[in-house]
Length: 285
Ligand code: ADP
Ligand code: ZN
Image (cartoon, rainbow, N blue to C red; front, side, top):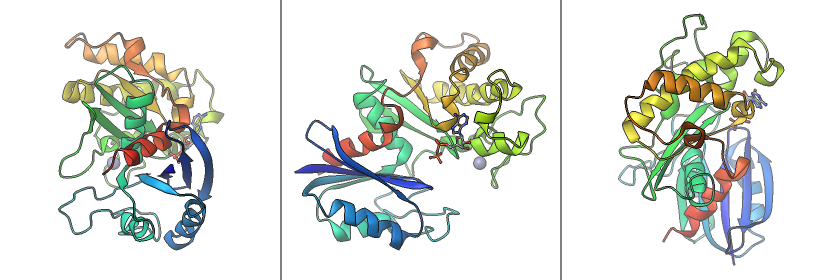
């Protein structure tokens, strides 16, 4: 028997199975097209294996409120064909096994908590800075959620004095995702992040925006570890810039762990989401 997991992104779905030790045995990547087409290929992959459980970590927003009529749905996504799609229902209809249902970033936070950078901690926060910005937190083994899941990428930020860019978020303009996501970098400079020099002004702006959110979330959640992943964080020079800016903004108001060990990269690298999903599935009744 295997554990199964789906990490569902706006561009691709990663499907994987693991052994009892959560070592990935097989994985495939499927382009995200329509729900029918994509799930057809997802099922074709998983149908080959006897599965004990399934974990789904998906792009959103999604409904995680068990009392809601649309629990298990992807909700207001602008992605064509996926709005109000009953994703969990479709997978449940195919496999009569325990299935975990959460966001991609909650799953990644859980993976890092159990097997990655936060393995020795009781709480952690995970943020991805990529096409979008999202975040999730684990506190004493539980995913932080209430009426819905966290939407940490849409917290408003103070605009950098040298930044007149209006932002890419159609809802807020000057939220973190609006000003600091991969598309915001590209929209501001007409070039992708990896085409800009390592000492470009943009990285100082990125740090300015990300540090604001990390201060806000530190003051709200007081996590033991903050893990930053996603395509934009491949620019490793960002970590020290963010730590510096964080120290400036926090101004020693509350103690945090040493910043070199507090604001870190994912120990599981790009596998945080899929491993977290495998673990969450396995722990579901
Ligand atoms: P997604 O968010 O779509 O799941 P990623 O986390 O890889 O995928 O994020 C993609 C975004 O990150 C794109 O906007 C891309 O331009 C940007 N990006 C990817 N690699 C790098 C890099 N090495 N440096 C800067 N930006 C990058
Ligand atoms: Zn926003």
